[in-house]
Image (cartoon, rainbow, N blue to C red; front, side, top):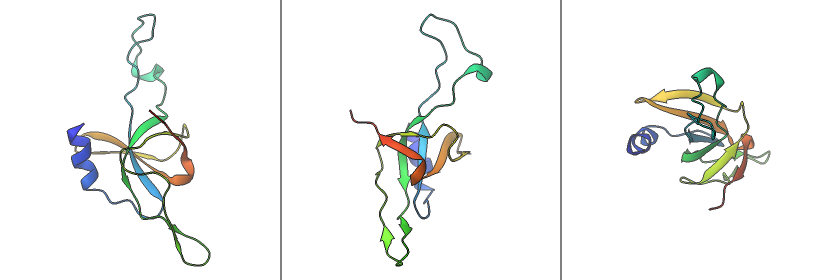
Length: 104
């Protein structure tokens, strides 16, 4: 994960956007069947790498983002934009697409 942290230092999300590194997809089912890439579920859980400063409300005041770097979050299944930075698969989502923070 060291490279994902290095990649996040190159990114500074704007507004209420958040950069997430998705949790790796399952390669094998519990019964031992190996899944091809086409059959894998799209991940909906990941770790926050970078957080924007927050969006502005109607009065022009900045509204802070509810998550912070390092938080493990659940996000909407088809939310955000996927991209690669230095070979790492990352996702940028708006705060509204983050459904919950996972408590350890």
